[in-house]
Length: 324
Image 1 (tube, helix red, strand yellow):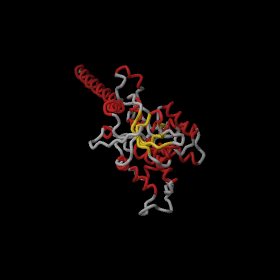
Image 2 (cartoon, rainbow, N blue to C red; image 1 turned 135 degrees about the vertical axis):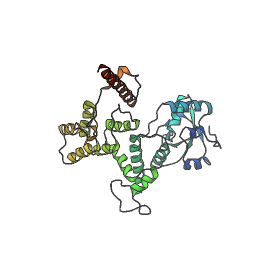
Image 3 (cartoon, helix red, strand yellow; image 1 turned 90 degrees about the vertical axis):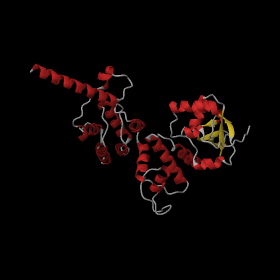
Image 4 (cartoon, rainbow, N blue to C red; image 1 turned 180 degrees about the vertical axis):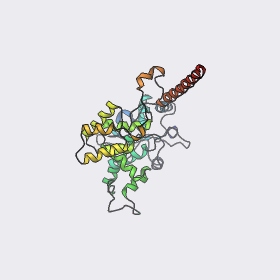
């Protein structure tokens, strides 16, 4: 059954939970009809690049949905088979499912695949935390959609034709997503990494020293290696508990371009002592884990160990002074 809903004047709960509509969506809500569509008839967006997690924020949203329902309708487009494709509102749909609702308010909008991609990406880029892998996939999808729409968006070279004000397409896309043109290029290059390596790039957002992680710049250099060479890098990371620095990654890329990079060379480069690791000392976590709670962060463990050693050193100094 078709119903028409008026958008509330006050700030919605969806706004509070970080999924407020874009300016375009707000304008559309003023004159578009909102339909209550069965969740069973709504399919997810193909190759959706953003993760939808069941975390504390999601639980808060579920509680809100149970009490107040969905305040900001999702956006869908109708498929040829009569079903609907979800364009914006994947977190809202999951919250409705977990709240055991049967329908969700949606705007049914006619749009092309490329128009849907652009809306999907732009609506999700409002999230507070976005993983590098999510940016990599979504930036590439948006770039390709723009290209198919006739915009010159070659991110590997400066185009001959400029869209406006003599700006390169990298600058134009960077302005849209709030990144520099070089950063946009780096994120799109991450799509050339094998999945386990891009997972290590995502780990860099967590900033837990106990978890293997690769920074953006070395990751970009590694993206130019063949999948087989990247597998060798991954094996070395696992076996020797080391990740490549930017300098090491650049060295591997140059050797790869000369067809001089193999498993032995990768191992040799990655096990070189880094300049900033000359005085580092590692203690396997399993040897000290019994002294700490399982969820103790690595930096907290380091702080406690240093304090304990300081205490032991002062005690030793007093013992030696008393023995004189």
